[in-house]
Amino acid sequence: MIIKGRLSFQDYWNYQLHYAIPRYSIMFALFAGGCFVLKFGENLGLHFNLPPIESGIILSVALALAITSVLFTSFYFRVKSLYNSSEAMKLDQEYETTEEGLKMKNEEGEYTVKWEDISKISFLKTHILIYTGKRQAILIPHSYFGPANSVEEFKGLVERNRSKTGASL
Image (cartoon, rainbow, N blue to C red; front, top):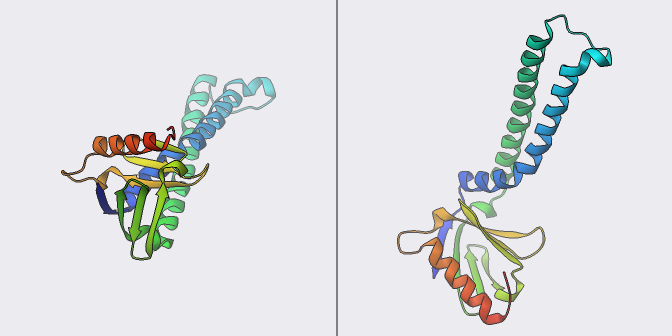
């Protein structure tokens, strides 16, 4: 099976969003801490000249919007900057499943990752991640699959080839 495509910013953004969830969990923890301080701030010696319930609600919403906006905006521009600065990411890519492994080709050359060198494969909603190391993965967006090639067919080929080598997913 041969899969071809060019990584779009949207594909790269979806990939980055997948891994941003832990960062946003920290943001929500900060938000919860802020709500705690606002709700129980009077006991800590903090005074806001508003009725307690209204001040807690207004300030909690303002804090949540401010933190979310700043973090999400900076995250978006950092991802866009990374995408724009990488020419290799924007090259046409071709992936072919062979008996030996996954062959990757682009204008800069070609490389084959052997099936036994793949440590993990994640089939996600918008893309497939093929891990060749703990922090290194090959990103294949679902948009690369046309009507002739399906994600399920690719998954079956990968599982069959990996099982032939004795490697587990």
